[in-house]
Length: 239
Ligand SMILES: [Zn+2]
Image (cartoon, rainbow, N blue to C red; front, side):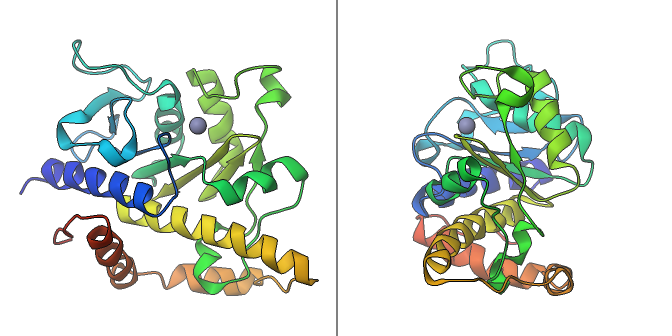
């Protein structure tokens, strides 16, 4: 199997997992950097993640232009993906979602931070990008490269960012990694709201986060991926 075939199958599985685990509903998307051309990326046409087939996946330039002139209608927010791939050579997959438990943190000023070891991968503290700061009143959707680049600037070298009144964007070194962090971002947000209702939270220290992130290996990612893939009706490919 070629690297491209592998990544296309991974993207179908990623879409099904994110839908099945409640991270995306009819909206939200996941992309991968093209394995043979770092200046292109792969992303489905505009379609609900649960319904995506391999034939739906389109190759785009970083500016968001489809390589095939006859490509079907794209996601409006594809610029999130190109702008981050442009800024972050270390990133090979990106998830953009509207996962429900992260939304309250984007609108209240309460910082989303990890306190469960599995959530260390969301980063030391998740920043919030507010479209209104630079772009005023908008639909809140990232609809051009200017907005995408502004989001990429705030993301910096981090793995995650929230978007005020909208959702979150998560980056990873592989499709499996970006899905893993997306799922634990939702878990962490839900648990933090529960813990906040009980009292003062003891968050992970910076050193604990760095140690946990440093020992994340393919064994851990694959163990979760196999389970999530099968639960979503897909087989895990050899990695
Ligand atoms: Zn969105």
